[in-house]
Length: 148
Image (tube, rainbow, N blue to C red; front, side, top):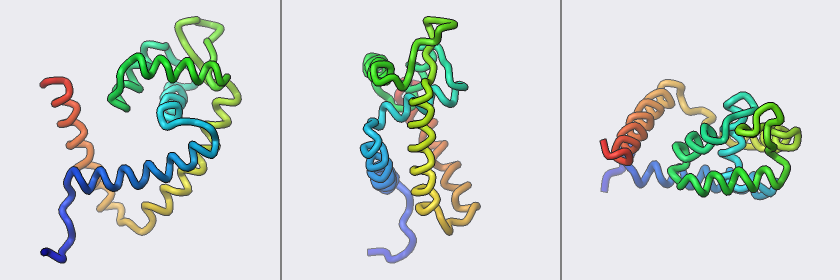
């Protein structure tokens, strides 16, 4: 058995993902929001606070690798919870409500503090290498999913 530095592989990446996600889920649960809802709110924020429904569905499907019907359902949940609303200027768009923006900002602040602790002391060059590797793995996995 080797005692050297382990080599990154799918299992190691999955373990890191699931450990960090468990911390995130704890924050989200305290605020009554699911992971899928959080990703959907983040997509609306990234789009400037208002986004076409089709664009939102494509963005979240691409991020979560889930079915369009799931994302449409999550969007309806967020609308029913008054975290998103139909954009009065264009019914084909949804926008954040004040409550949605407040929830997003609160959970983002709490998770940023967790992330800061998790990444503390890791040299920038190591993070850059990890970023390049994970980007490449993601691109290859997305190509496989697309049948390329």
